[in-house]
Each structure stands twice: as C-alpha cells, then as structure tokens.
Image (spheres, helix red, strand yellow):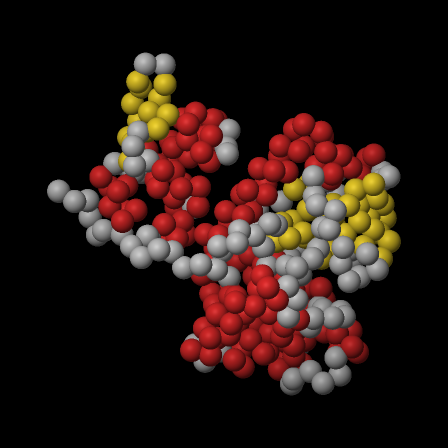
Length: 333
C-alpha cells in the first residue's frame, strides 16, 4: 500500500491531469503487457498486440523496450513522464532531452539491479545520438501497435472519468474529489490517500503538489515519489466492456474519433435528426456550455448546421458531416 499523508495545504495543491498522458500509457501498458495482470480485461488485448508485433517484425524492438521497463524493481527515472504531455512527441522530447549525465547515472544505478543488460544500454548511457534516436523510434512503433488502435475507447473512458471527478469536486471540493474514487483504487481517510499497489511506502509531500493522472492501461495505481521529480499518482479508469470489440461493418465512428475527437464524433452520430443543445448535452452527459463549444467547432468546419427554433437552438448534420461519418470521399449529390 502506498500512503500519501496530506495536510490541508497539500489538499489545496492537488492537481488533475486534463486526460491521458501518451507516454504514461506507454509505460503502464508495457508493464501490463509483461506481467499478465488483469487477465480477463487485458488478455484479448495482449493477444491482439502480440499478433501486430509479430506481423510488423517488431519482436526484438519490444523485447529491447522490456529491458528498460521491468515489471518489478527500479526503472530509469528519465523514462518516467514528468510534467504531463498532450502528445507522444512532447513526452519523447522530454525523455530524449534529459541531460546525458543524468541518463548515465540512472542507467548505472539500473545496472546494479539488472546485471545482464544488453550492450546497447551502454551506448545509451553514453548519450550516443543514434541509440537515443533508436529508443524514440522503438517507443513510437510500440505506441502504434499497442495503444493507437484503441484511442477512441481510451479517450472516451478518460472523458467519462474526468466528468465524474469534476462533478465530485464541484459538489464536495478537493476532499469530495479524493473521496470519489472506488475503495479498491484510491482510499481517502483521515488525511491519508492510500493507493492499492504492490509498493509499500509512506509519502510526505514536503509542500510539493500532487498530480493525479488517469490511465487506461493499468491494473492498479502507480506513483512517482522521487524527491527530484514532480509528485505523480496514476490511477486506472473504468473501462467499457466493449472496448476490444471492432466497430460494426460500415461504422466509421472509430476512425472518425481519431480525426476529430471522440466527443465530436459522438455528436455527429447523434444528429440523424435535429437536436437542441440541451438534448445533446443530456445525451452526452456534458454541460450545455461544453456542448456548445463542441458544436461551434463542428459548425465552423461545415460538419453541422445550427438554427434557432423558437427559444431553442437546433443542430443538424450537414451533407459534408454525413459523408465524413459514412466514410464517403465527398458529399452525395
């Protein structure tokens, strides 16, 4: 059990990440891919990813990454996401721009726990440019195989989780937020936030803010508690039972979500008939203001039209929006 002891000041400094961090998803999914936890939820994913890796001829690449992301014990700190990132490339920029002296020190420490590391890790410790670039390429390739195909489901799950946390904070403040997690994930009691994970540690923040980061590809919370790094706690979000199901034949919504985002893809799907902003908001479980923001973006792109009907504002999908939803090359005449 990992216990964070939080004063009233610490509670006021808690932060919520805006969504999934791509590099954290790489980290947690690599652990999950190797450790065989949560077999019911993730074994089908493991089989799919294994087959993609085999077809892509990337077995050696993923095996090399596994050396740096062991399922137990210490992992080099420079691989851990530090400040949150909106894209994989931002996260990789942070990793690959780590000062060479830090990389060398961390890999030297890592070698104390893993005495049989492959020879290329020595070049990585020396900051050899080609090896650093190869590391970045390997992470990108793994991301495309193991994470990118599931983004519509993972981002939707993160959106749902964020709305739940926001509602909890609005009704109960920071303590309401901390109490909103299931007891089997995070437990808040008497000034202590306890995370159900294999690590046993007592953590005092020392005035540092604690950032809570949602993660789809994790079976339990994980934390960064190093004194020299931002204090971070990841937690698993609830996963829909159908997240591994392929989209129905002729349904382009999954690919569309990758293009315009899962929420706006859902709006397009819902607009078979005209709907008001309030009805859309209710169907999406969003606030009217957030719904209006999404519809404004779709309207500016020409994918929907908006008109006033009495006191209500009604939205309809345009021909261009229908063509995009159906995967047509251009609007039908």
